Image 1 (cartoon, rainbow, N blue to C red):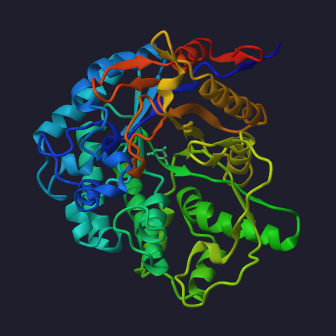
Image 2 (cartoon, protein in one colour; image 1 turned 180 degrees about the horizontal axis):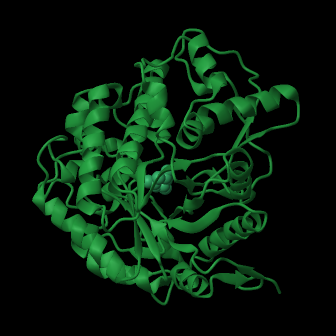
Length: 465
Ligand code: FCB
């Protein structure tokens, strides 16, 4: 029996975010985000009509939750700061209650021996900023940079790992292309502007941090979805390259290499959707290179060459350049509708090694959302053997990539405790810890016990399940 060994300082933990876990959504001085607003306008777009006020009450229960993390063997945990809580007007005065909450929460993590990884923006645009045009408006970029500097000043002495954004492509595609997040715009050119300004905001925050707080590191969390062509036919391979360019390299290249891929710049020019820029932007982007990268990986993207013509009157979409391909036989997480392809994580890590200078990175999210987990309860505990198998199989590929030289420093599950998942609300459960929505009672799942053992041993053997 072989043993999958991870380094002694490997980061074991999980990730969460402010909007999805804090609760106290419109309390304690917090101003509304686009989520509070959208829920007020269109509550039917949220699963079972559950909105952002009903999250897992981390604001009240962070102390006992952090003790639970300790029981799970966490040595690190990522969450985010809510801009709308910290600076309710978007710019200007800070909310003292928020300063107190984040200071205490970070301190509590440190006291428990858990390294805080703090993300500065996780899909939760303050409504006041969206009313100014959100990321379409360059003023919002500057407001964000001021907000990040405030965070560095307030919490910088205790936080060594910062992240400017979580999955910055998600607000772009869901909010400006696919009508799945507020502001429900469908417009490629505006989407490009949003993407571009997000990366400028990122780059300016990175430089601000590098100027002021040398002792820590700053990165970004990207959801990388490796693109696989249906076949080796050149047209299928081209489709995969286009999907990779649009969905991965559009953020990965500026974040790690400090510049956009030339093919992407050309493509945007050819289709007349290039963003508005200002002199000096290229230099700003160059200064925005990250110290390390968080990789969120859930599923692969399989594509084929387009077989159907594009409606010339329809909106421009990334799918103009490829068609999604459903491989006939595949492993599925049927609850979420996502394919499970564990080797994808290895392919990502090797790509980072070979083409991105082997930048220090870690798996910042990976996980499995499952509906109706109560049906797996035996003697009061969710027996989530499927989740254990999911994590284990991904870790085996992470381990293989590391033995081949990939610079991967850790693995965080999405998520610590079942949480509110945007428009899906509580439909799918992802946590190591189950949450009873009515009583807010927390119970560790079988996967939670399992990961505690793995973290203690820094690995697992091949027969262990
Ligand atoms: C990721 C997000 C996270 C969570 C998981 C399920 O895309 O980063 O907030 O919703 O999906």
